[in-house]
Every structure is written in C-alpha cells, then in structure tokens.
Length: 277
Length: 235
Image: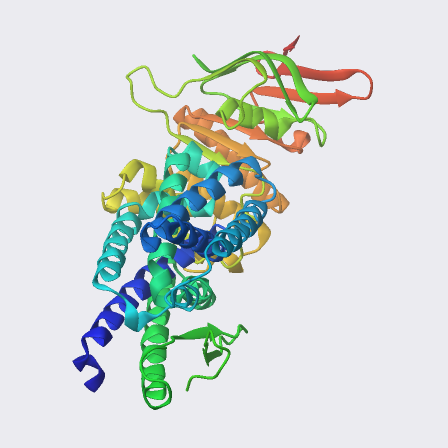
C-alpha cells in the first residue's frame, strides 16, 4: 500500500483503472464487428497526429486525439466503400498513418524525450490534464455503451437486420468510430501506441472465449483488463524500484491461450522485450 | 392495399444489370414467394424492396407507415443470417429478446407481455428447450430457427425471409411454412419469402414471383397469382 503514498502512483492507478474499464468494453464490440486491428491502426494514426502537433508547435496530445478521431471516421467511410474487404480500410489507414508519422518525425530533429512515452506509454508520467481527459472519455464511453446497448447489440449481430428494425446504423456506426478514436487516443499516454490494442483486444478475446452471454462477456473483459492492469502496474513498480526508478512502469495482460478448457496463462508483456517480474 | 410498388426498376452490380425494367405490386395480407435459379437476383429484389439497395433507375416504394400513422413493424431474416460468428456471446433467449428492442426502445424493461412473446416465438420454431444454450453451439438449422424466432419476436406486420429453410430438415421446413401460413391467414400478416423449394411452398403461396435469367435472352420476371390462377407478365 506504500505505493499509494505517491501522488503520481495515485494518478497512475486512476488512469490505469479508467482505461482498463472502458478499453476492454470497446474491445468486445470491436472484435464482434471484426475490427480487431482498428485500435492498432488508430494508435499509429494518432502518432502521426502527435508528430504533426510537435511540428506545428501545437499540443501533441490534443492533435493526436483529434487525428485519431479523424482516422476512425475515415476508416468508417472506407468500410462502407469496401464492404466485401472489411480489413482493407484498416490496412490503408494504418500504413498511411505510419508513413505520415515517419515523414513528420523526420521534419523535426530534436525530439524531446517525451516522444518515447507516446510509443511505449508512461503511466507514472500521466498529467492531471491527461487524467481528466481519460476520465471524460471513460464517462462518455460508459454513457454510450449503457444508453445504446440495445441498438449496439443489434448492430454487432447483423447490420442489415438492424437497419430494417429501425436502428440508425450509419449514425450509430459514426458515433462508435468517434468513440473508438477517442478511447485509443486517451489510452496512449497510459499504455503507449505500440501496446494500446493489447489493452483493448486481449481482455475481449479472453471474455469471448469464456462468456456464454453478452453481459457476462463485458464483465469478464473489464475484470481481465483491471486485473492485468493492476498486476502489471504493481509488479513492475516493485521490480523497477530497484532497477530503474519509476520512469518505466509497464502493465501486464492476461492472455487466454485458447483451448476448450479455457486454460488461462498470465503473460507479462513489456514493450522493451524484457521480462518484468 | 399495396405494401410495395416497383416501377421500371433497373439495378445491377458493377456494369452488368441483373434486374431490368421491373414493375411489380406487392399487396398486404399475402403470402408471396420469390423463386428462380441461382443468380436470378432473388435476394437483390428483396433488398431493393426493403430499400437496402438503391435502383439505378425507376422507383421503389415501400409503405413504412400504416393508415393510422404508426410505423409498420418489419421482420427481416436475411440469407445466411445464421452464419454469425460461432463465438458470438449470446444465449438463445438473449438473441430472441433482442427482437423486442425496437418496440421497447432504449430503456423500457421487459414485462410479462414481452417475455410471453419471446417464449411464444421460441416455441413456434420448436426451440424453447434450447433457450439457455449458447447460440454458437447450435446446428445450422437450429441457428436459422432462432433467427426466425428473433424476427417473430418483433411482432412484425410484414415478415421478409431470404431462403429461411436453409439447413432445416423436412419436418422443420413444413412446420415453418405452416407457421408462416398461419400468420398470413389468421393474423393478416404479409410474408415475402425467397425460396428454392417451389413444390413444398406452392400450396401455401398466394403469389409467386418467378425470376429467370436466360443466356442471350436477357432477364424475365413472371408473376403468378396462385389464388385466382391468373397468369401475367410483370415485366
């Protein structure tokens, strides 16, 4: 409990818990809509936004946030154009986003140290502003998923029957895309561009293997997200305390190594390729 | 009373038209079958009627409101609706309850009437005892039946089904046709169904729309009114 004595750790746990609630919920819907790579794509697009912000001397977090939302809307638009190749828009936007990020990064030589925190995340360096943004996105997300749970269920089950039964599918899809962009952008300071989809998709994939009902799937995903976040944060804090100080705190994720008996293996993931615990 | 009216409709995919100058009226309270070989644009015709596809030219009208101004509830069971992801996290009863969502809106809770509708819908397709099974564990025919139950739970005035009997055995198919026939005759509902099984369905149908594409002869639509044995070209 001593770790809660530090203000930055309190912020880290708040930021981690909020993202670990809303990320996995979003992940369940993304998996069911067959848009698993959307989070990864938008994180790369957001990186281009961060680079753009830096080059133009704007707030990089804000520009990353806006560009992630714009990227999500472009994917949604392309998804309608390439109906039969649903993974194509994701590939198009991911490569475009990454290419744009590389070009923009090459325009500026003196990258501040904080740029690596966008890539790998730096949960202990989450600022008050970022925490407020994460709280706002989580609140909006919970409202979105609770209020619209019925039309969203019909949407993810079958879009055509949803249209005929009166669900305003284009509007709902649009809202979903905007919210996906917001969540990815808000999660980046916590988990980093490279691991954002781990937080969003892995708990969902575990939940979909275990759950028999829809509400149970959401609950398991959130539970797995929270356990993964807390265990990783705690473990890496104590491991990192002696080794490197506080500057790198990673998070752990549960991954279901799927088989019919649903054996669960806990893997600790580190963006630095080293075992944390 | 006319439910849907198509006038001089042309539609195709990419550059090739698959429906040319089709004019057709579909009346309320009938059991209508759409038949034809593979590639005859049966599903396309359904989607045009429903407004899921927009015609290249011509007009498609579909009555969305009743004379008293209320919306007409439409139940739609698309082709291969049952080919959903086997991992979709839902129990059978959860999926069928989702058919009530439009009627209930965002917040209204399920009451005893809604629960009774769900139970009746599942019993009508003989799937009530499977209500607590995960939907991905069912067979193809059973999946098809719960998707039909979901459409029935909408209490639709118009029920539109695209090859609904796919994967079903003979007894289930006959049960389905009799159920749909019951809805038309006893409750005044309208049923539009794409089918390959003309011999099985003909005894129940009021109107049969036959679509055919012939090599070098173009496209043809034959509308057969089975009630009055009146034959006429609908093109």
